[in-house]
Image (cartoon, rainbow, N blue to C red):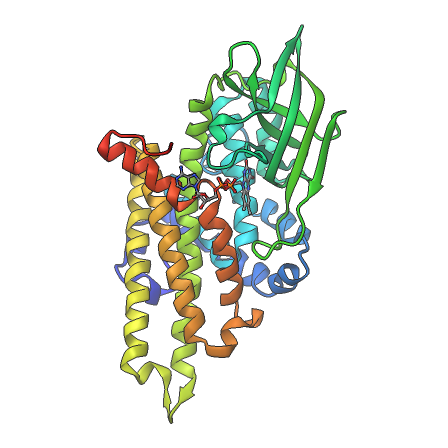
Amino acid sequence: IGRSRATDYFHIGDQLTDDERDYWRRARDFVDDEVLPVINSYWENAEFPWPLIAALGRRGLVGDGIEGYGCPPMSPMASGLIAMELNRGDGSVGTFLGVQAGLAMQSIAMLGSEDQKRHYLPRMARLETIGAFALTEPRHGSDSVALETRARRDGDTWLLDGAKKWIGNGTIADVLVVWARDEDDGRVKGFLVEKDSPGLETRRIDGKGSLRAVWQAHITLRGVRVPDDARLPGARSFKDTGRVLAGTRNEVAWSALGHAVAAYDIAATYCAQREQFGKPLVSFQIVQEKLVEMLAEVCSMQLYCLRLARLMEEGKLTDTIAALAKRNNTVKARAVIAEARDLLGGNGILLDFHVMRHMADIEAIHTYEGTATIQTLIVGRDITGVTAFT
Ligand code: FAD
């Protein structure tokens, strides 16, 4: 499950069903034909790649394995392969998919009412409706469990007040899943807030050195009124938010694999062609060792992903397993990409060679959905029974 046989050293691709292979091929074609030829200029200019997103919507790849409601039917493996491929192309496009399908659509699919699912999911799968997931706040990132945005019941409606930060698609979303604390019972609940709601203000975060082709937002909510039927009925406490996050941490593990595959593939090709001291770089032992170490990490990431998909199929994927996989794969991807950048010499910092973009983008991926440190603490608590967060 890499770019080619060279990056699928353990023949994991042989384990795929025809259907999964088909999704993989379609995602790969989209990346090779449409993303890679144009993405660098979007990244450099910090422009959102609207034409690519429209094309992605037409390819029937968005749905994250949600059953029904106009979502393309796909196994967890197929869904992971799509995340892997989009990120092999570009982290911004991959992150867009993660927010749209993994966070916003899954919140509605997992916690929404029948009416909410029917209303939003089909259009979201076609990318005619764009979603966002507003959890993080200026004062609460890793400890988003302590979020301060308030929800006050007022008859048949709710009033939302607070601030959010880092919200992917925040300025372009048609609907935002906003997480807020019920003033009455102190529990975290989820609300579907439509764009243009009075009191909702979104502002793009500029000046990013990572994921430049996708936008995040600062959001302010001042007395935003939402009807009670826009509340996610299945979101009763922060534990329910956590169920959505466990799924997306799985997806981030696949995304990190995509970045590492891209970097390894580019470095291996480059080292075969580039000559120094009268010989191709691949003829030097130290270069071979670096390539083998990179491949070993890529293979271990693939094996994690294969197992994640199977555990998900069997309904056995826990938040702690997803946390360990997110940690493992983002940490390893970061190291593989840094090595690839080194092997490309000066060209390694040019966007034309793509590795620098992956190197910058993996920094955000390493942080979002909970930093590697936070994943470590989650797994640490699981294996020791002792909480070390505070
Ligand atoms: P902090 O929580 O302030 O962490 C800073 C440092 O302290 C980190 O190294 C962290 O590991 C460390 N740290 C924190 N607590 C502990 C501890 N107990 N022990 C040891 N070390 C600790 N959020 C959304 O809700 N929706 C989105 O769509 C979204 N998209 C994002 C996109 C991007 C590009 C980025 C960068 C972020 C996005 N986020 C989003 C927010 C993201 O999930 C948070 O940035 C992340 O959880 C970290 O929170 P923070 O930035 O506040 O860092």
